[in-house]
Length: 332
Image (cartoon, rainbow, N blue to C red; front, side, top):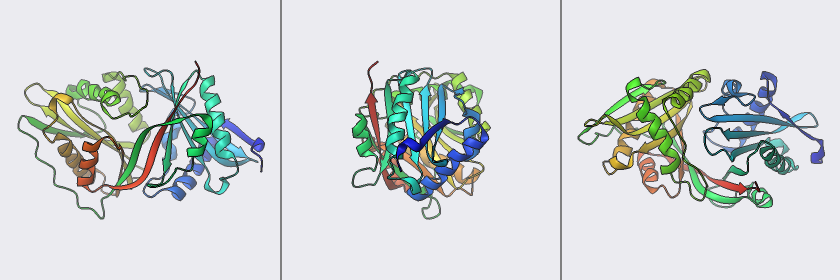
């Protein structure tokens, strides 16, 4: 079947969002272990490109002879990195090898250009050994591998949690769900911003992100609106009151079996005290207490982030796949 029968439509309502979700459920169930499609309710508040916490997302569904065959998600930063678009493409497993992925890749590049973006990022999963299925498509459009990562899984049913580590003298642990205490909001926002410069980015060309308390509150509000439980553990430097490090976990309240590691960072001046291990072990215990139905924790780590990889392996994470981020720079 030729791809000229493929029609790409914007997702603007519950009915079309349901088509996107159905494609995602089929693809993620086929391709991955412990990595389901996001619940439908997580899509709804962001339909139509609503700007939340510095990001605007657009979703599209591709119909092949009227049958949902694939989806596209374009994520556009709106407060920094204004030339960037992140592109995620999913093809239904029963409709692969029919040109859908190729069509959506070239269509997405053109759509990102239409929206004024010239630096495109693609996240391409593949096996631990061997090429990713989408690698030839990346070469065709001229994208280059920029950051090598692995997804790792912690199975809480088969791996005993480590006891929460004692923190170094002069630091204390604080934990909460959903809303950061007012006294710590600026420090947590600051470390969210540092993630864009401190986390290994390989060859990705990225500008620093600018975070403040208001942007953090928008992120927290979106978690609540989309039904996510957001768990944070921080270490506070007692002499200054500064937030020295943080780690975040997120889990859907409606689909709690699988959780996701979000940011983990220790401010450079406070490194060397094993705060990273303390943060992770304390937050895993908080997850077990607040979301006892959760079985899996997903995390992605750059190969170059050897310290965090060693912490995660000590906690019991196992490699699942390789994920490569590709970058395509277009003429301005």
